[in-house]
Length: 308
Image (cartoon, rainbow, N blue to C red):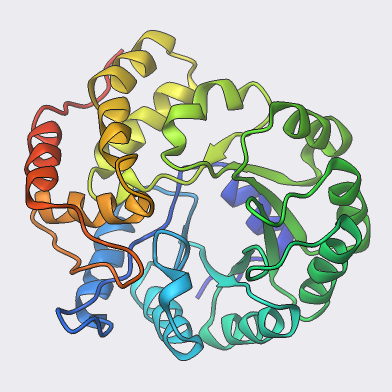
């Protein structure tokens, strides 16, 4: 099994497309491990920078701690040895530390640190939160800046200094000013990951800010399209990117935007539409309606690979 040092993981994540596999559930909403393992095997046949098990698209927020460890273990066991698997950590600081320990037990290569549960916090508290998690693990840690954990440039610079195993900054806010300040302060010290919902929409302009990669949910059900789009972005083929945005990505986001939580639901619907059903989403999320699923299926049927 390949074991990545934090520095090695930082380089690997920044060199290719990333994705968050969905977590498969049976009709009774229990974890469907066999189907999940098959999904990881299918996705890992493609050249990716890493997979984030039990992440946001994987419904981390609806899984128990024991389920998270089981999902991560299944991903580690099912993916090729050289495909990095990152595990989630989140909620309160002590709970996040426990998730970090579970990630190591499960054999994960790194950790994505989600915002603390519910409560707002100032920059000092957020910095202490990240520092506690980084101290508790030898794995590389990526912080996820979004919602109630938006890290300012000064805070990220402090964390990069105090936490040698902090390797990445994932932006889920879309604040160009903050992203520019973080990148100009730290340069190659971190890997920068685009993490807005349907990150393809922002991929090209973010590339100019040093964000060399992003997490693609679409990769779950259209891996070829997602990789072609990523290549077009990296090669700055503007016309090809705009064509794919127009033909698929933007109409896709119009369906996604109809209900809160559909950013996850639409990915599972995409798997159903392409013959790889992943089961329902867990409450409090809701699945697409039958009409919306038919609309998405028709849209997917029109997709062709990005060309020069």
